[in-house]
Image (cartoon, rainbow, N blue to C red):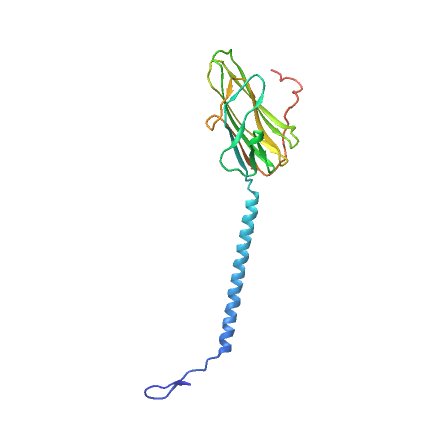
Length: 219
C-alpha cells in the first residue's frame, strides 16, 4: 500500500494495526474510568455529608396570634392563640384548644407578646401572664410567670418574654393564660406566640422551683 507520487518511487505507508489502536484506547478508558470512579466517590461523599449535616439542623418553627380581643378578670383564663402566622415545621397551631402543639422533641425557644387595656377608674394593679407547657396527658410540665404592674389610668400595658424550654415528647403543648386588666388585645399588632427549635437535644430541662440558700450573706 502506498501513495504514488507524480514522479519518482512510491512512498510506503504502514498498514493500520487495529489491535494496537484498541490497546491504546483500552488503556485510555481504564485511566479515564479511574478518574470518573474517583470523582463519583467524592461526589457521593460530599452528598452524603451534606445530607448528614441537614439532618443535624434543628428545623422547627410555628407562630400563632389571637383573632379576638378577650375580656379579662381577676380569674386567669387561656388566651385565644388560635390563628397560625406563616408556615410551620415541627409544631402546629391547635386552633380548637388555643395552643401550639409540638410534633418533634428538642429545645425550643418560646417568644410571647401580649397587650392589655386597663380601666381608667381603677387603682392600679398587676396583670399576670403565665406561659404553660403541658405534657401529653394535660398535666403541667413547666411554666413561667410574667408580672406587669399598671397604674389603672386606662393606658395599655405590654408584656413580652423569650425563654427556652425542653420538649421531651411529641404532642406536648404550649399555651398562655392571663388575669388582670380589662381586656387582652388580639391581632398581629398586639399578640404573638411563637416557637423556634434551637437544638435537637432534650437534656438539662431545668427546675421550676429551687430551695432558699442556707443563710443570707454576711454584710
